[in-house]
Image (cartoon, rainbow, N blue to C red):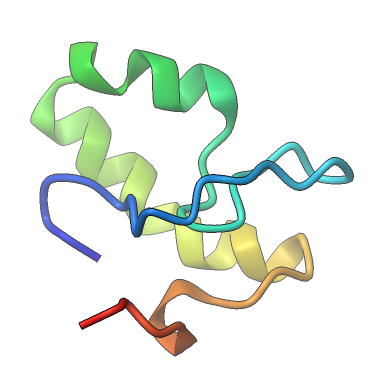
Length: 67
């Protein structure tokens, strides 16, 4: 995960949780991302791994990033 964005270019929304499979954000969060302050972004990113786990989606750290 980049420090600037949690996006890993896997942009699909899980219908059950309404979270992006790739980053764990909701569509409204993704849309608002460019307008968020750095502290808002960091706070949101800090909770994404737990959010994905709670939704039963694979954690970002265990994914291939296409290096």
